[in-house]
Each structure stands twice: as C-alpha cells, then as structure tokens.
Image 1 (tube, rainbow, N blue to C red):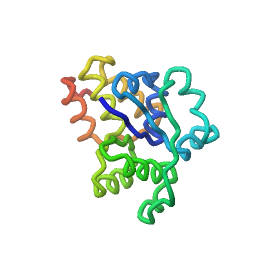
Image 2: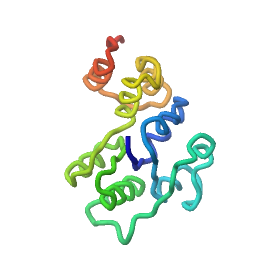
Image 3: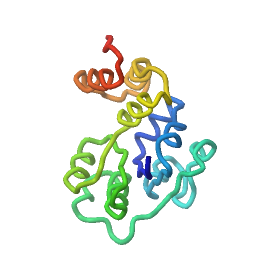
Length: 163
C-alpha cells in the first residue's frame, strides 16, 4: 500500500496489541505530526522511542502554515494529522475520533481507523483472529466498539461474532 498519516490513538492501540509491525506490512511509510509525537511523550523532532525499535520508517512531519480554523475545535493531534492529509493528496489518515473522521471525510480525505488496519491485516493474514484482539481492546484499553461495528468487522474477516 501507500503512505499513511496517523493520529495517536491508533498507534497506542496497536502498540498495546503488540501489532505495530502491521503498519510496516501494510504501508510504505507512516507519518505523524509533531502534536502526535508530543502526545506519545517525545519531542516533536524525534520518532517516538517505543515506535523507533520496530518502525524505523515513521517520520515526524509538520503541517505547513497555520491550521485551518475548521480543525481547531479538534484535538491538536487530530487537527495536525488532518492538515497533513490535506497537504498530501492521496494519503490515508488513520484516526479513530468520530468528529475528526467526519471532518476528514467532508474534506475528501481517505480515512480508516485502527479497526480498519486490523481488518486489512487479517485479510492479508498478517495477524491472527480478531475476536480476541477486539476483546482485549474493549476490556483492557476501554476502547468502545459498538455492537453493529464489532459484528461488521468480524463478518468482514470471516469470523463469527461471539459474545
């Protein structure tokens, strides 16, 4: 696949699942804005240390100029990630925040979330069954997945939705 711009939440979820390697398998390059780097606890000029060991292709890139006013109501990481996606037509944005996803889609940005990354990886057999991974994400990380979305994700990868 191609380059992707990521917000903080998807990286944290993939790290908690020990699945950061999926980004390298699925994308040629991962870009994060400085705000995402800061949210991961490192200076904006450095690739996050926890990502560096397995993701040497992660780049921190600053958006050019001022952020558009319509993204300023979002979190700083989401706003900078959207601004970068707008500056790089054809890129894909990994973001889980519903408002940020809606804004991105209105702007014509291709959007996926951590579940989309997991589905793509599962379809390519880069990861094992998603049922236990989703359970971990919901239980341990307190990541909310609606019942219809959970069912759809599991159907998409040919797994029965079990309680």
